[in-house]
Image 1: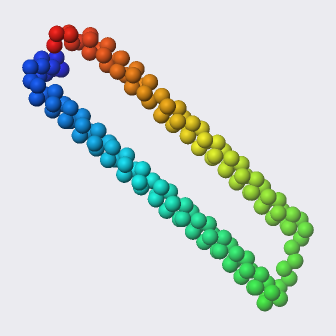
Image 2: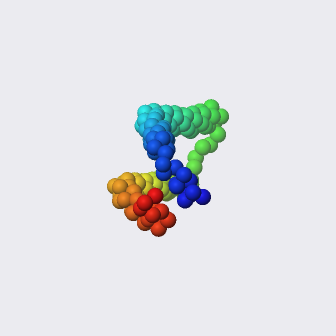
Length: 150
């Protein structure tokens, strides 16, 4: 089928113009797409940062409010709020371990992001090489199926 369409189009100069127009249209669409991405990504990043920051403040506010309410309740109720040293130590140890765990997870996440960034950079740096390799493969297969006289 490809050979047949190739031969039938070979005498028609409008066919090459049409193919170039099609390629140009695809190129324009790709440029338009990436232009929009380049403009929208920073805004999206800022919006996500703001959302994360707002949730952090909400979480911190809720915890602080509940601790304050707990203290107020204990003061007004007159209940004995003495906590054993072992319980205090346990709370502090759990808190310290949670902070260490969070720091460790953050380090892993940052290293994964750095690795992904390096992989993307390597791919980007070698995009031309991949295109050249694919061009050579395409030319090889085209020479196998199409004679130079076509």
